[in-house]
Image 1 (cartoon, rainbow, N blue to C red):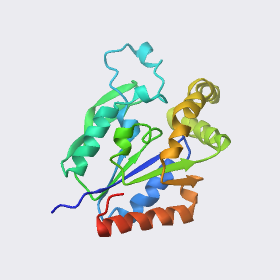
Image 2: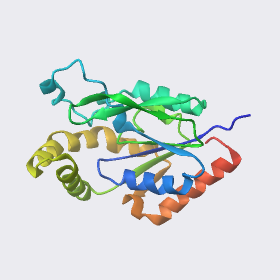
Image 3: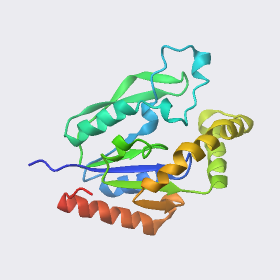
Length: 211
């Protein structure tokens, strides 16, 4: 009988440290076979909209994501079936033509700001994590990231944070903390929490129990 993969959901606010937690887990289990399914890749296709209309999208709202497709893909991977993970084009603000082939693995990490928001997706997870970092650190990290990696100005990042990121965090992201099995302050720098998470993943892999 084929063992069920372990599914880990890693949520938290923008620039909270989700990626560092994900990377820490990935490095431990990469030889065991692990894949990361980024919620950011599952933004809805906006090819039917004009470019100016796409610029109005609130990317921190649950409606921005094609959650049905994300659930379909995670379910397929649990059933040991390959999927074609979409790619999002941040320059043109719509889904890219290329896809990424993902083969079934033993550890599936689903990472993103709102991966704990939808009950259907939560029900597929063995372990649910919320990375909890103070707002001042998150906005500083976001300004640094968007200026360096996305060519944004500090003013534009701050305007977006105040108009969309902060209110959506308070309304949709922060409340999902109550669904988490483990809350990790400060992301990947919390070595004790990371060690506890890795130990639990190993336990499930060895016994193949489902929480």
